[in-house]
Length: 324
Image (cartoon, rainbow, N blue to C red; front, side):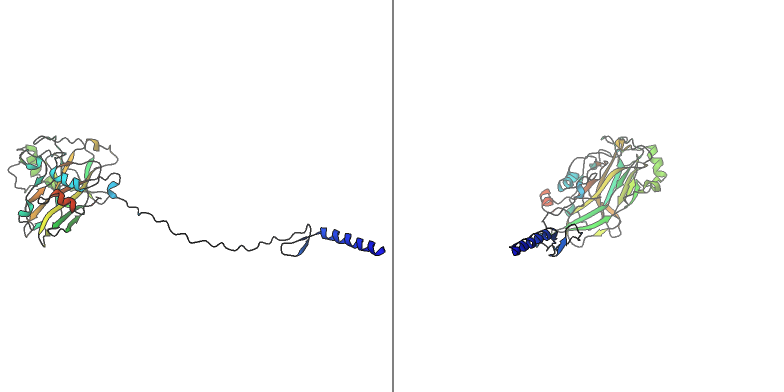
């Protein structure tokens, strides 16, 4: 009996001691209430399949779609040569073919072997023969981008022969130009025209100003247009089917401190290519584009010789530029 009592006491004592202890996560006994640093078991990395990159279409920025740049196209190239004028120079007689639109010549049969590219910028008239200028702006200039030229060889290959920034140019007409008396483009004699021509004002250096874009800007006035060209003369190494030239122009504010009057500015331009002799003397144009009104946006002006159909142009267009 005594043995049973002793065993019962030992069993109760064991239960009381077990209640005063807890098992730690590490497997050691710790007295309840004691502070033990937390032990973090290492977490095995989760194996994952490599994620393949998502295929996306390349993002292409089309410069011609940028704000302020009007897009060029094969249709516009054709329209600039065969469509009606959208503006007129103030000093062009209706007897001149460019008064009605672009001038197309039988280029392949002209015997041409050397060319350059050129353009003219002038104050606009009202669409009547030898009209007064309708330009009212005094704080607006015309900014001209890169003048480019290509030839189309008879084997179907386009080759760029001109890519000229800040082109050489003069006011027209120059004092040495062989116009009868003071008559320019068939518009008759005018004392003011005679005085300005004799004064050789085309040498005025302020007429040409470099813009922040690195281009030149001009400010034509009545009786005086700005004529500029590529300095290089390209000699055909093999037969050529067509010649194409392109330039971008826009209106810009001359003095930012003065009011912007581009809304009352009226300037026009056209573009062309001349044939040259061995020493670079101009033998005449090989066609002229239509006159177009210059706007606030960069706008392409195009010239294309005759001898190529629109279907041929669409099938094999020139690599024209979409930026100034």
